Image 1 (cartoon, chains in turn green, yellow):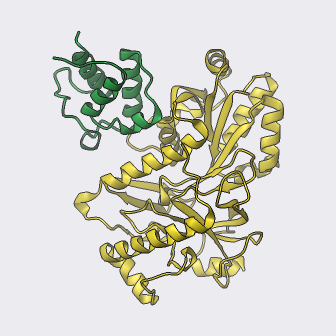
Image 2 (cartoon, rainbow over the protein chains, first blue to last red):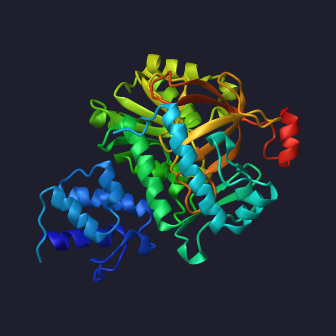
Image 3 (cartoon, chains in turn yellow, brown):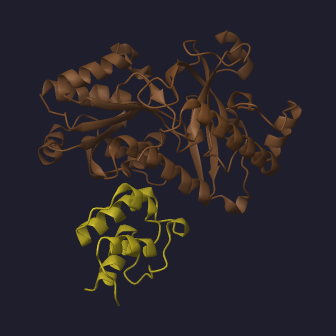
Length: 81
Length: 346
Protein backbone atom coordinates (compact mmCIF):
# COMPACT_ATOMS: atom_id res chain seq x y z
CA UNK A 1 0.00 0.00 0.00
CA UNK A 2 1.34 3.45 -0.86
CA UNK A 3 2.06 6.01 1.85
CA UNK A 4 -0.90 8.10 0.70
CA UNK A 5 -3.30 5.17 0.99
CA UNK A 6 -1.97 4.28 4.42
CA UNK A 7 -2.50 7.85 5.62
CA UNK A 8 -6.03 7.99 4.16
CA UNK A 9 -6.80 4.73 5.93
CA UNK A 10 -5.50 6.08 9.26
CA UNK A 11 -7.79 9.11 8.89
CA UNK A 12 -10.86 7.04 8.01
CA UNK A 13 -10.36 4.60 10.87
CA UNK A 14 -9.63 7.24 13.53
CA UNK A 15 -12.45 9.54 12.49
CA UNK A 16 -14.91 6.70 11.99
CA UNK A 17 -15.53 7.51 8.32
CA UNK A 18 -16.78 5.11 5.61
CA UNK A 19 -14.10 3.16 3.70
CA UNK A 20 -14.62 5.18 0.53
CA UNK A 21 -14.76 8.64 2.20
CA UNK A 22 -12.74 11.38 0.51
CA UNK A 23 -10.26 12.62 3.09
CA UNK A 24 -7.58 14.51 1.15
CA UNK A 25 -9.28 17.86 1.74
CA UNK A 26 -10.37 17.12 5.31
CA UNK A 27 -9.87 19.86 7.90
CA UNK A 28 -10.33 19.71 11.67
CA UNK A 29 -12.60 22.71 11.80
CA UNK A 30 -15.02 21.39 9.17
CA UNK A 31 -15.61 17.84 10.37
CA UNK A 32 -17.74 17.16 13.42
CA UNK A 33 -16.35 13.66 13.94
CA UNK A 34 -12.86 15.14 14.30
CA UNK A 35 -13.15 16.13 17.96
CA UNK A 36 -10.37 16.18 20.52
CA UNK A 37 -10.81 12.49 21.37
CA UNK A 38 -10.66 11.49 17.70
CA UNK A 39 -7.62 13.75 17.34
CA UNK A 40 -5.70 11.71 19.92
CA UNK A 41 -6.67 8.45 18.15
CA UNK A 42 -5.59 9.96 14.85
CA UNK A 43 -2.20 11.03 16.20
CA UNK A 44 -1.66 7.58 17.72
CA UNK A 45 -2.75 5.86 14.49
CA UNK A 46 -0.38 7.95 12.36
CA UNK A 47 2.49 7.35 14.79
CA UNK A 48 1.88 3.60 14.73
CA UNK A 49 1.39 3.36 10.99
CA UNK A 50 4.52 5.32 10.08
CA UNK A 51 6.67 4.54 13.15
CA UNK A 52 7.25 8.21 13.95
CA UNK A 53 6.96 10.33 17.09
CA UNK A 54 5.08 13.56 16.54
CA UNK A 55 6.03 16.34 18.97
CA UNK A 56 3.62 18.65 20.79
CA UNK A 57 3.78 21.54 18.33
CA UNK A 58 2.94 19.23 15.45
CA UNK A 59 0.08 17.57 17.33
CA UNK A 60 -1.40 21.04 17.68
CA UNK A 61 -0.59 21.94 14.05
CA UNK A 62 -2.09 18.72 12.68
CA UNK A 63 -5.37 20.29 11.67
CA UNK A 64 -5.87 18.89 8.17
CA UNK A 65 -4.95 15.96 5.96
CA UNK A 66 -2.51 18.22 4.10
CA UNK A 67 -0.83 19.23 7.36
CA UNK A 68 -0.39 15.54 8.18
CA UNK A 69 1.34 15.08 4.83
CA UNK A 70 3.62 18.03 5.60
CA UNK A 71 4.47 16.82 9.11
CA UNK A 72 5.22 13.30 7.91
CA UNK A 73 7.33 14.82 5.14
CA UNK A 74 9.50 16.39 7.82
CA UNK A 75 9.97 12.90 9.22
CA UNK A 76 11.30 11.81 5.83
CA UNK A 77 8.14 10.11 4.57
CA UNK A 78 7.43 10.83 0.91
CA UNK A 79 3.98 10.82 -0.59
CA UNK A 80 3.27 9.84 -4.18
CA UNK A 81 0.13 8.48 -5.80
CA UNK B 1 11.08 27.34 24.82
CA UNK B 2 9.31 29.34 27.47
CA UNK B 3 6.57 31.95 27.78
CA UNK B 4 7.80 33.09 31.19
CA UNK B 5 10.29 35.72 30.08
CA UNK B 6 9.10 39.27 30.77
CA UNK B 7 10.18 41.29 33.80
CA UNK B 8 7.19 43.03 35.38
CA UNK B 9 7.88 46.58 34.13
CA UNK B 10 8.14 45.44 30.53
CA UNK B 11 5.11 43.16 30.82
CA UNK B 12 3.06 45.95 32.38
CA UNK B 13 3.89 48.26 29.48
CA UNK B 14 3.11 45.65 26.80
CA UNK B 15 -0.08 44.36 28.41
CA UNK B 16 -1.43 47.86 29.09
CA UNK B 17 -1.10 48.61 25.39
CA UNK B 18 -2.46 45.27 24.13
CA UNK B 19 -5.33 45.07 26.61
CA UNK B 20 -6.32 48.69 25.91
CA UNK B 21 -6.59 47.76 22.22
CA UNK B 22 -8.54 44.63 23.11
CA UNK B 23 -10.92 46.69 25.25
CA UNK B 24 -11.57 48.98 22.27
CA UNK B 25 -12.05 45.93 20.04
CA UNK B 26 -14.66 44.37 22.35
CA UNK B 27 -16.37 47.73 22.79
CA UNK B 28 -16.76 47.95 19.03
CA UNK B 29 -17.94 44.36 18.56
CA UNK B 30 -19.89 43.40 21.70
CA UNK B 31 -22.80 45.82 22.27
CA UNK B 32 -23.70 44.63 25.82
CA UNK B 33 -20.04 45.12 26.82
CA UNK B 34 -20.01 48.61 25.28
CA UNK B 35 -23.19 49.47 27.22
CA UNK B 36 -21.66 48.31 30.51
CA UNK B 37 -18.55 50.39 29.97
CA UNK B 38 -20.62 53.41 28.93
CA UNK B 39 -22.83 53.06 32.01
CA UNK B 40 -19.82 53.10 34.31
CA UNK B 41 -18.20 56.03 32.49
CA UNK B 42 -15.15 54.02 31.46
CA UNK B 43 -12.51 56.05 29.59
CA UNK B 44 -10.80 54.87 26.41
CA UNK B 45 -7.22 55.05 27.54
CA UNK B 46 -5.67 53.48 30.62
CA UNK B 47 -2.44 54.17 32.43
CA UNK B 48 -1.90 50.66 33.79
CA UNK B 49 -3.27 47.11 33.71
CA UNK B 50 -5.00 47.76 37.05
CA UNK B 51 -6.90 50.70 35.50
CA UNK B 52 -8.59 48.50 32.89
CA UNK B 53 -12.31 47.84 33.38
CA UNK B 54 -12.97 44.32 34.68
CA UNK B 55 -16.01 42.13 34.34
CA UNK B 56 -17.07 39.82 37.18
CA UNK B 57 -16.54 36.29 35.90
CA UNK B 58 -20.12 35.37 36.79
CA UNK B 59 -21.41 37.68 34.03
CA UNK B 60 -20.61 34.89 31.56
CA UNK B 61 -23.11 32.73 33.43
CA UNK B 62 -25.84 35.31 33.18
CA UNK B 63 -25.29 36.87 29.75
CA UNK B 64 -24.19 35.82 26.31
CA UNK B 65 -21.14 38.00 25.72
CA UNK B 66 -19.29 37.61 22.44
CA UNK B 67 -17.51 39.85 19.97
CA UNK B 68 -18.09 37.71 16.88
CA UNK B 69 -21.08 37.09 14.64
CA UNK B 70 -23.23 33.97 15.10
CA UNK B 71 -21.82 32.57 11.87
CA UNK B 72 -18.25 32.88 13.15
CA UNK B 73 -18.83 30.80 16.30
CA UNK B 74 -16.61 27.72 16.06
CA UNK B 75 -16.85 26.32 19.57
CA UNK B 76 -18.95 27.09 22.63
CA UNK B 77 -17.30 26.05 25.88
CA UNK B 78 -19.34 25.61 29.01
CA UNK B 79 -18.47 25.17 32.64
CA UNK B 80 -20.84 24.57 35.44
CA UNK B 81 -20.59 26.20 38.82
CA UNK B 82 -21.68 24.40 41.96
CA UNK B 83 -25.20 25.81 41.71
CA UNK B 84 -25.57 24.72 38.12
CA UNK B 85 -25.07 28.14 36.54
CA UNK B 86 -23.25 27.67 33.27
CA UNK B 87 -20.69 29.96 31.68
CA UNK B 88 -20.87 30.04 27.91
CA UNK B 89 -17.64 31.03 26.16
CA UNK B 90 -17.72 31.61 22.40
CA UNK B 91 -14.61 30.98 20.31
CA UNK B 92 -14.03 31.61 16.64
CA UNK B 93 -11.48 29.56 14.73
CA UNK B 94 -8.64 31.99 15.40
CA UNK B 95 -9.27 32.17 19.15
CA UNK B 96 -9.60 28.38 19.39
CA UNK B 97 -6.29 27.85 17.59
CA UNK B 98 -4.51 30.50 19.68
CA UNK B 99 -5.66 29.12 23.00
CA UNK B 100 -4.41 25.60 22.18
CA UNK B 101 -1.08 26.93 20.95
CA UNK B 102 -0.49 29.14 24.00
CA UNK B 103 -1.49 26.42 26.44
CA UNK B 104 1.02 24.21 24.64
CA UNK B 105 3.74 26.83 24.85
CA UNK B 106 3.08 27.31 28.57
CA UNK B 107 3.28 23.60 29.38
CA UNK B 108 6.34 23.03 27.20
CA UNK B 109 8.23 25.28 29.60
CA UNK B 110 8.24 22.39 32.06
CA UNK B 111 7.61 19.41 29.77
CA UNK B 112 9.90 20.15 26.82
CA UNK B 113 8.91 19.78 23.16
CA UNK B 114 8.43 16.00 23.17
CA UNK B 115 5.19 14.36 24.18
CA UNK B 116 5.96 12.18 27.16
CA UNK B 117 4.31 8.88 28.12
CA UNK B 118 1.35 9.97 30.18
CA UNK B 119 -0.40 8.69 33.25
CA UNK B 120 -3.91 10.11 33.58
CA UNK B 121 -4.99 10.08 37.20
CA UNK B 122 -8.61 9.60 36.34
CA UNK B 123 -11.01 7.02 34.98
CA UNK B 124 -11.85 6.33 31.35
CA UNK B 125 -15.47 6.47 32.44
CA UNK B 126 -15.43 10.28 32.36
CA UNK B 127 -15.26 10.16 28.55
CA UNK B 128 -18.14 7.73 28.13
CA UNK B 129 -20.62 10.10 26.62
CA UNK B 130 -18.55 11.71 23.94
CA UNK B 131 -21.20 14.31 23.14
CA UNK B 132 -21.36 15.75 26.64
CA UNK B 133 -18.12 15.50 28.55
CA UNK B 134 -18.07 16.85 32.04
CA UNK B 135 -15.74 19.77 32.70
CA UNK B 136 -13.46 17.12 34.21
CA UNK B 137 -13.49 15.08 31.02
CA UNK B 138 -12.78 18.12 28.89
CA UNK B 139 -9.87 19.07 31.16
CA UNK B 140 -8.31 15.63 30.99
CA UNK B 141 -8.75 15.45 27.25
CA UNK B 142 -7.30 18.91 26.69
CA UNK B 143 -4.22 17.87 28.60
CA UNK B 144 -3.91 14.49 26.84
CA UNK B 145 -2.60 16.33 23.75
CA UNK B 146 0.67 16.88 25.59
CA UNK B 147 1.28 13.20 26.26
CA UNK B 148 1.53 9.89 24.42
CA UNK B 149 0.85 6.23 25.23
CA UNK B 150 -1.83 7.26 27.71
CA UNK B 151 -2.70 5.02 30.63
CA UNK B 152 -5.58 5.56 33.05
CA UNK B 153 -4.53 5.22 36.69
CA UNK B 154 -8.09 4.57 37.87
CA UNK B 155 -10.41 1.80 36.75
CA UNK B 156 -13.92 2.49 35.47
CA UNK B 157 -15.30 2.38 38.99
CA UNK B 158 -12.83 5.09 40.02
CA UNK B 159 -10.56 2.85 42.12
CA UNK B 160 -6.77 2.80 41.68
CA UNK B 161 -5.77 0.33 38.98
CA UNK B 162 -2.60 -1.07 40.50
CA UNK B 163 -1.79 -3.52 37.66
CA UNK B 164 -2.11 -0.69 35.10
CA UNK B 165 0.13 1.54 37.21
CA UNK B 166 2.77 -1.16 37.59
CA UNK B 167 2.72 -1.93 33.89
CA UNK B 168 3.03 1.76 32.96
CA UNK B 169 5.99 2.20 35.31
CA UNK B 170 7.67 -0.99 34.09
CA UNK B 171 7.46 0.27 30.53
CA UNK B 172 8.01 4.03 30.95
CA UNK B 173 9.19 4.65 34.52
CA UNK B 174 12.88 4.73 33.62
CA UNK B 175 12.70 8.01 31.69
CA UNK B 176 10.69 11.24 32.11
CA UNK B 177 6.94 10.73 32.03
CA UNK B 178 3.95 13.00 32.49
CA UNK B 179 1.35 12.63 35.23
CA UNK B 180 -1.83 14.67 35.05
CA UNK B 181 -4.78 14.77 37.38
CA UNK B 182 -6.98 16.80 39.64
CA UNK B 183 -5.23 17.58 42.89
CA UNK B 184 -7.55 15.60 45.15
CA UNK B 185 -7.48 12.52 42.88
CA UNK B 186 -3.67 12.61 42.77
CA UNK B 187 -3.58 12.77 46.54
CA UNK B 188 -6.27 10.21 47.32
CA UNK B 189 -5.63 7.72 44.56
CA UNK B 190 -2.08 8.05 43.28
CA UNK B 191 -0.07 9.18 46.30
CA UNK B 192 -1.63 6.67 48.69
CA UNK B 193 -1.24 3.74 46.32
CA UNK B 194 2.31 4.65 45.29
CA UNK B 195 3.35 5.05 48.93
CA UNK B 196 1.79 1.85 50.22
CA UNK B 197 3.13 -0.25 47.32
CA UNK B 198 6.53 1.41 47.09
CA UNK B 199 6.07 2.62 43.49
CA UNK B 200 8.89 4.77 42.13
CA UNK B 201 7.58 7.97 40.52
CA UNK B 202 10.91 9.79 40.53
CA UNK B 203 10.98 10.31 36.75
CA UNK B 204 7.49 11.78 36.73
CA UNK B 205 6.49 15.38 36.05
CA UNK B 206 3.17 16.06 37.74
CA UNK B 207 0.78 18.69 36.41
CA UNK B 208 -2.25 19.10 38.67
CA UNK B 209 -5.10 21.49 39.24
CA UNK B 210 -8.54 21.81 40.75
CA UNK B 211 -7.89 23.35 44.12
CA UNK B 212 -7.39 22.13 47.63
CA UNK B 213 -10.96 22.41 48.85
CA UNK B 214 -11.67 18.70 48.69
CA UNK B 215 -8.48 17.98 50.60
CA UNK B 216 -9.41 20.01 53.65
CA UNK B 217 -10.64 16.83 55.38
CA UNK B 218 -7.28 15.24 54.71
CA UNK B 219 -5.52 18.27 56.17
CA UNK B 220 -3.10 18.55 53.28
CA UNK B 221 -1.53 21.90 52.56
CA UNK B 222 0.26 22.60 49.27
CA UNK B 223 3.70 22.44 50.91
CA UNK B 224 2.87 19.16 52.62
CA UNK B 225 1.56 17.75 49.32
CA UNK B 226 4.90 18.46 47.65
CA UNK B 227 6.99 17.28 50.57
CA UNK B 228 5.22 13.95 50.94
CA UNK B 229 5.00 13.21 47.21
CA UNK B 230 8.75 13.78 46.92
CA UNK B 231 9.64 11.95 50.12
CA UNK B 232 7.36 8.93 49.74
CA UNK B 233 7.20 8.39 45.96
CA UNK B 234 10.18 10.33 44.55
CA UNK B 235 7.84 12.60 42.56
CA UNK B 236 9.57 15.96 42.96
CA UNK B 237 8.81 17.80 39.71
CA UNK B 238 5.36 19.05 40.65
CA UNK B 239 3.49 21.93 38.99
CA UNK B 240 0.10 23.09 40.18
CA UNK B 241 -1.82 25.39 37.87
CA UNK B 242 -4.72 27.81 38.07
CA UNK B 243 -7.01 28.60 35.19
CA UNK B 244 -10.66 28.85 34.22
CA UNK B 245 -12.79 28.17 31.18
CA UNK B 246 -13.63 31.89 30.96
CA UNK B 247 -9.96 32.48 30.05
CA UNK B 248 -9.35 29.24 28.19
CA UNK B 249 -5.74 28.67 27.12
CA UNK B 250 -4.31 30.82 29.90
CA UNK B 251 -2.92 28.97 32.89
CA UNK B 252 -0.87 30.26 35.79
CA UNK B 253 1.78 27.66 36.48
CA UNK B 254 3.66 26.77 39.64
CA UNK B 255 7.42 27.22 39.29
CA UNK B 256 9.99 24.46 39.85
CA UNK B 257 10.71 25.38 43.48
CA UNK B 258 7.03 25.37 44.42
CA UNK B 259 4.81 27.60 46.49
CA UNK B 260 4.05 30.23 43.83
CA UNK B 261 2.12 30.46 40.59
CA UNK B 262 3.63 32.46 37.73
CA UNK B 263 1.95 34.40 34.90
CA UNK B 264 2.82 33.67 31.26
CA UNK B 265 3.96 36.63 29.14
CA UNK B 266 0.45 37.18 27.73
CA UNK B 267 -1.30 37.24 31.13
CA UNK B 268 -1.11 38.76 34.60
CA UNK B 269 -2.96 39.03 37.92
CA UNK B 270 -4.09 41.95 40.03
CA UNK B 271 -5.12 41.50 43.68
CA UNK B 272 -7.85 43.90 44.78
CA UNK B 273 -9.23 45.06 48.08
CA UNK B 274 -12.84 43.75 48.06
CA UNK B 275 -14.16 46.97 49.64
CA UNK B 276 -12.26 49.79 47.91
CA UNK B 277 -11.25 47.84 44.73
CA UNK B 278 -7.80 49.36 45.16
CA UNK B 279 -4.90 47.20 43.96
CA UNK B 280 -3.20 45.60 46.95
CA UNK B 281 0.58 45.34 47.34
CA UNK B 282 2.44 42.03 47.68
CA UNK B 283 1.67 40.26 50.94
CA UNK B 284 -1.91 41.52 51.28
CA UNK B 285 -4.65 39.01 50.33
CA UNK B 286 -7.67 40.11 48.31
CA UNK B 287 -9.84 39.28 45.32
CA UNK B 288 -7.99 37.95 42.27
CA UNK B 289 -8.37 39.61 38.90
CA UNK B 290 -6.92 37.77 35.90
CA UNK B 291 -5.98 39.44 32.61
CA UNK B 292 -4.98 37.80 29.34
CA UNK B 293 -4.60 38.82 25.71
CA UNK B 294 -6.06 35.50 24.48
CA UNK B 295 -9.81 36.30 24.69
CA UNK B 296 -10.29 38.01 21.31
CA UNK B 297 -13.72 36.55 20.46
CA UNK B 298 -15.44 37.44 23.78
CA UNK B 299 -14.76 40.22 26.31
CA UNK B 300 -13.02 37.99 28.87
CA UNK B 301 -9.62 39.69 28.76
CA UNK B 302 -10.01 41.34 32.20
CA UNK B 303 -11.94 39.25 34.72
CA UNK B 304 -12.60 39.61 38.40
CA UNK B 305 -12.70 36.08 39.81
CA UNK B 306 -14.46 34.88 42.94
CA UNK B 307 -11.18 33.56 44.32
CA UNK B 308 -9.00 35.04 47.01
CA UNK B 309 -5.31 35.35 46.30
CA UNK B 310 -2.11 37.04 47.33
CA UNK B 311 0.94 38.23 45.42
CA UNK B 312 4.09 36.97 47.15
CA UNK B 313 6.66 38.96 45.19
CA UNK B 314 7.63 40.52 41.87
CA UNK B 315 10.66 39.54 39.77
CA UNK B 316 12.10 37.62 42.72
CA UNK B 317 11.33 33.96 41.99
CA UNK B 318 11.95 31.08 39.55
CA UNK B 319 10.60 33.10 36.63
CA UNK B 320 10.14 36.86 36.06
CA UNK B 321 6.99 38.80 36.91
CA UNK B 322 4.51 38.41 39.75
CA UNK B 323 4.30 35.22 41.75
CA UNK B 324 1.14 34.48 43.70
CA UNK B 325 -1.06 31.92 45.43
CA UNK B 326 -4.77 31.24 45.27
CA UNK B 327 -6.09 31.09 48.81
CA UNK B 328 -9.51 29.65 48.02
CA UNK B 329 -12.98 30.63 47.08
CA UNK B 330 -14.63 33.75 48.37
CA UNK B 331 -17.11 32.43 50.98
CA UNK B 332 -20.51 31.58 49.43
CA UNK B 333 -19.50 33.18 46.14
CA UNK B 334 -22.02 31.17 44.14
CA UNK B 335 -24.91 31.57 46.50
CA UNK B 336 -25.51 35.30 46.36
CA UNK B 337 -25.44 38.34 44.15
CA UNK B 338 -22.12 40.08 43.71
CA UNK B 339 -22.74 43.01 46.00
CA UNK B 340 -23.86 40.82 48.90
CA UNK B 341 -20.87 38.58 48.47
CA UNK B 342 -18.40 41.39 48.45
CA UNK B 343 -19.95 42.94 51.51
CA UNK B 344 -19.74 39.62 53.32
CA UNK B 345 -16.07 39.22 52.44
CA UNK B 346 -15.35 42.59 53.91
